[in-house]
Length: 159
Image (cartoon, rainbow, N blue to C red; front, side):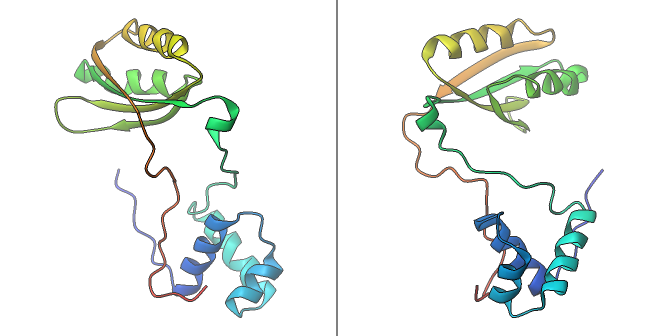
């Protein structure tokens, strides 16, 4: 089922951009930065939450500083009719950051973080033991050039 793209005005887009930069901003600070009333900021944010555009608020963690400095990109081939089952199982695993349904020679791409090679090794062995997993290819990240889930969605905006 394809999601319907919400039509948002400049204020909504600027609110989203501000919250991506700092999700702890108060309604007062958002209103002040955008030149709108606090009530407008509150109502706009509540509307974005109700529409499911704002799905939650979280913090960005430097995983390297917590000891998870080994990142792997794992490509997986799965038996076609069981693809969703395999993806669902992988998504439940602790070290998994992202699971993507992809095109090409592989069916699934997984991004996962580990403390050391041993934990990566155990993870890969648990993956290949899952029912309906046919093949995996693991790529270890050598250097992170950019890693940020946020994207700037506001164009030509003055924030």
